[in-house]
Image (tube, rainbow, N blue to C red; front, side, top):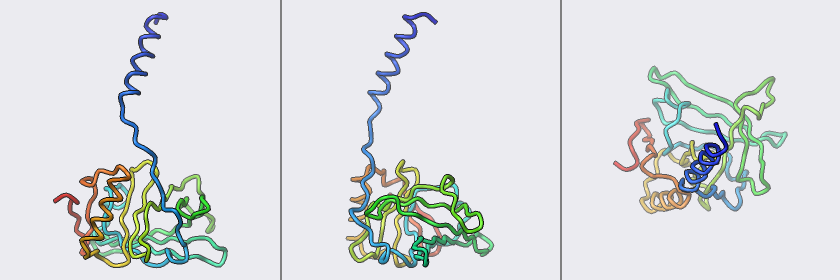
Length: 188
């Protein structure tokens, strides 16, 4: 390939890159009290993902702070044969405001291997810690969590929808998770 072709190729790549809209990075919650965040959470909405395909019940997450001040994570659901699917992990805080965590479900002798972990960013949490929105920084994974199996209040859903839109999520990509475990599109 000659010099002219290389320059033309670079120019085309530059033009293509400039024409792709840039999405601003996610903004996380100003501060998260881990003491208030711990406990049981129900998944009430999520983006489709590969690791929950076998879940036929509403997934739940349990968080607790152990005596070493490590956040322990347990996620569970039931498959189609009513067999419990359960994973255990640990999370470490990576930002002083506690809104960015690194979670690993790969434990060797109880020690988390964070190189195999994922980023868990808390984007928004209700002032009373009744609901929260969490995501990976690339927006590939996102969940709406609630302290109850369902969020009945429409105003709360409007607030959640507004937060997701402001964070550049496409609402119609989300699945609502009913307490029965049934999934339906957010926009239906």
